Amino acid sequence: MRLTDVAKHAHTSLTAHTAPRHSYGYLTWEWFAGLRGWAHPLLFAALFRALAALRLDTPALLALAPRLLQAGFCACGDVATYVLAGRLFGSADTARLALLCHVASWFVFFAGVRTFSTSLEAPLSAVALALWPWRVHSVNNLPGSHLSASLALAAAACVVRPSAALLWAPLAAVEVLSRDRAFTRALLLRAVLVGGAALAASLALDAALYGTFTCVACRFVSFNLLSSGADAYGTQARHWYLTSGGPTALATMTPLVIIGAATAPRAAAPLACACAGFVAVLSLTRHKEFRFLLPLMPPACAFAGAALATLRGGGGRGEKPMPRWMPRGRGCFRSCVAFLVAPQALGALYLSLWHQAAPAPAMAYLASAAAAGRVGPGGILLLTPCHETPGYSHLHKPVPLAILDCSPDWRGERAGQHNERDAFFDDPEAHLRRKFDALDAGGSGGWSGSEAWAARVGAGVPPLRGLPSHVVVFDDVAPAVDALLRARGYALAARFFHAHFAVDREQRELLAYELQRTR
Image (cartoon, rainbow, N blue to C red; front, side, top):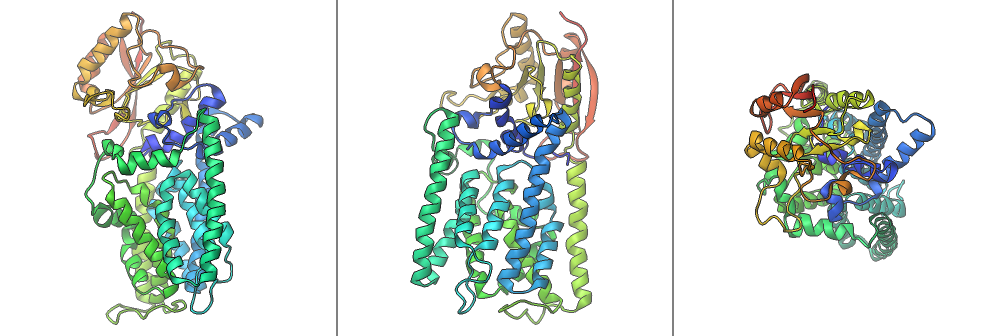
């Protein structure tokens, strides 16, 4: 896995653990705004402590271990998808085909093993759904139901990422309206007890590590839903999840999901309603991302598996008959499986190994330079878009590391002015020249825009002194700053392939400049 899509979110949990563990690690603005809970980063802190106790905490293994841990969580999501489909549709064949859909999904392969909070939210919700007491005909609770365990895992998903409640609130509402009073009382009572315990534990943990009472869920909802603060990172149309996000995430599985949901038995109706409610509420926000849909992949794969099973003639319990115009038979089934698996496998391999691949090898290069003592007191300057590289989570050395601040104006102090990232890309050469002049005058260059530098990177990092020894920039900006860098004594030291085609910017390579002489 080399691609670092949405790198800021992928590495937020990793860099956050480093401050209490090593007294250094770049904290993004969300931690100062109280928008992130500490439960997720503590998983990686525990992992790194275990590696340190075993004397295995090398930079290479510290970079790999979190992804291996998350891969284990993703594997739990695979198993949960199998169990969920088998229990809902009452067919081992459907369960196996749902598992095939989940394992073959390019999106799960691409995002499921990354350290997004959504990548942990998804398997937690999947296991909770697999244990949910679904109702089939006169059977109130299918075999294998564990209401308390399901609610506990759902609460854990909400602690990791509060938006998980958007899936569970509609499901609970549908169940309360459609089930008998005994189940409704049991559900509400246990939901209050389990949810209250999870909320209390989360508040206590965040208060202890923030140093003051902080309701992360309240701030998360206020910033993302009520104040539209996340709009600073891009906005999309209301229909984006239906017309672009969902079809892209599901890819060749899209028609199977639609058919499976349309012909699903009544037992699956609450799940379908919950998924629809989840997408509907997410569509109300202007800021949208593909990764927000990751928790819906296990239910989607269950519906797709049911459609495949029906095509092969092994439909599950209570499914509606397929439309007459739908083709059937082994030949059709095999064609559907090939259409499902082959494009997604190729896409998963390409996106995970080659597309936007530069940040990881670039950080490996900088980590080796830091280990060899080639990083000077001016540290490393990353002139890349918002947290495009994994930073200290791959560097693992307390050297000064400066990035372009891209935080939104969450305190209302900039009065419409650009953040540092936007100011740099408006005029790269002039902005960098001003920073270098400030460093020449003995200042820090003001690399941290909204927080004190020591608060951002931790007390374990020495203050910036002089020009950075390494400057990293993408090739779309390099022509604007190349002459200035060479005039200041820098030479191009390494080039890293990034992408065959552009996405947001014309970025094909990541370039690393190294200071050859002092001034």
